Length: 148
Ligand SMILES: [Zn+2]
Ligand SMILES: [Zn+2]
Image 1 (cartoon, helix red, strand yellow):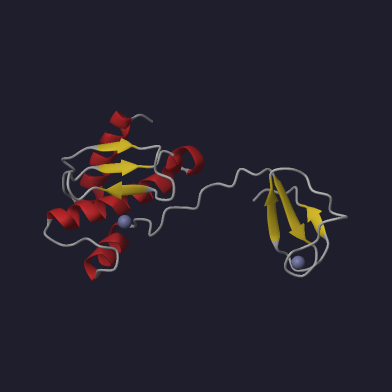
Image 2 (cartoon, rainbow, N blue to C red):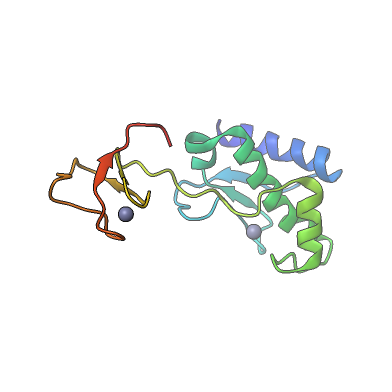
């Protein structure tokens, strides 16, 4: 999806879920790391973390767009649009926006699970399970080959 397609999607969601037009710019910003998107109070633009789509899904992306559109429409209607306001919480619930951006996907390929307490660990490399034990309970670790 490119910026123009994102723009079209945001305009569509704005009409369908908020019954109001989105008249500013929406674009991807790959520098965003911990947030799924941002609403800019000064310019009224919305930027979106491309990982919402590349590492997550269309459903997650739409949830993040709805979240940012709540800030947008409340702000333009004269509200503060901050997360802790009743107006924000109500509107977010009404349109089904996401409350938080999903956590970044952990790319470390090796997952170990403690056979005693179930604690999981992620590592970039294989570890020697005869040498290393669970940091929580000192139980034996085993490589977990299942999907997350
Ligand atoms: Zn927000
Ligand atoms: Zn353990």
